Length: 191
Ligand code: 5GP
Image 1 (cartoon, rainbow, N blue to C red):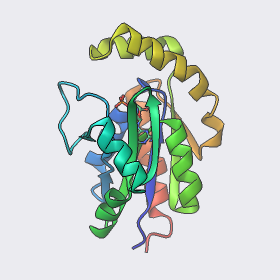
Image 2 (cartoon, rainbow, N blue to C red):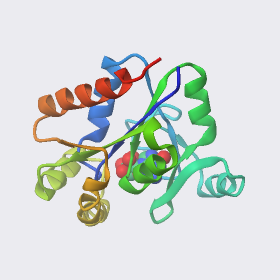
Image 3 (cartoon, protein in one colour):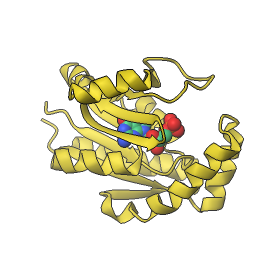
C-alpha cells in the first residue's frame, strides 16, 4: 500500500481540528501527524499527542539539521513544522496520514506530494463565526484572537487553490462531506 496524505487547512477557529478528530474516529487507517511547535502548551493539550512542544532554540536546531518536511513561523516566535521522521513513522505502520495545518503549510505539502495528497480547505460560514468560536475556546488572549482573525482574511483568499472546499456551516454537514471526500480519495487506487 502506498501511503497517502490528507491535509486539512483552514483559518484558526474554522473547526478543522474537530473534523480531523472525527475522521480519526471513523477511519482506522488514518493517523494524525503530530507537528512540532514552539508555542506554549494549552491546558487541554498533551505533549506527543497534540504537538511535540519544543523550545524556539530546539526548533531552530531542527531547521538547521533539515529535519522538517515543511515548517513555518505562523506567528512571531511560534514555529510549527512537520518532521520527516513523523511521516516515516506513520507510513511504516501502514497508515495514511492526516494533517491539521495552516493554509501555507497545507499548500506547501500538496505541492511536494502532488497526487499522493488530498488538500482540503475548511471554510467557516463567516469571519464573525470565527471570532465567536475563538472566544468560546477561552484559551486565546484578545491579542491572539485579533492576530488570528487578521490572518484569516488573507487565508480565505487561498481556498480555491485546494483540491476540495468543505463548508463548515453545521458540524453534521461538515462531518458527512469530510467522510465522503476522504473515503473516495482513500478508496481510489488503494492497492
Ligand atoms: P494552533 O496554535 O491553533 O494549534 O495552530 C496555529 C496554526 O498552525 C493552525 O492553523 C495550525 O493548523 C497550524 N499548524 C499546526 N501544525 C502545523 C505544521 O506542522 N505546519 C504548519 N505550517 N502549520 C501548522
